[in-house]
Length: 167
Ligand SMILES: [Zn+2]
Image (tube, rainbow, N blue to C red; front, top):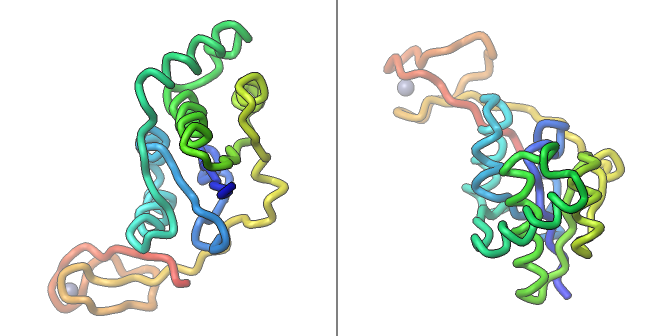
């Protein structure tokens, strides 16, 4: 069976770097993606999606309800965000599709519900793939690259610079 790493938003916030993982399929839910608000983390994830290192997907509504039901039974529901629930639901959908998902999370409530649902999980700390990123600044309008981290706007055309991780 094909192993798929399912990232929750805390994985990214705790330093997981999807760019460093090339041997597994990696997937994140749209809800988890929406929880990632820090510029640096968003840029990382969006870039990983852009280069197809990371996929984004949404679970089936019926699966979300199933996960919520289990989470209520184990008294974990109040500790879980909607994005946590959708991450677990996506993992269940993947099992149904014949994949072997592993949810990467340090959250004990998520791990607990995953256990009840028969979903494999792993803490991020053990993955040894924490973020070490070197950024490159570039102008999205004219493409000029900048090395100085203190520059905010393109000196040629005045556009606000963006950054993407150096691979
Ligand atoms: Zn420019």
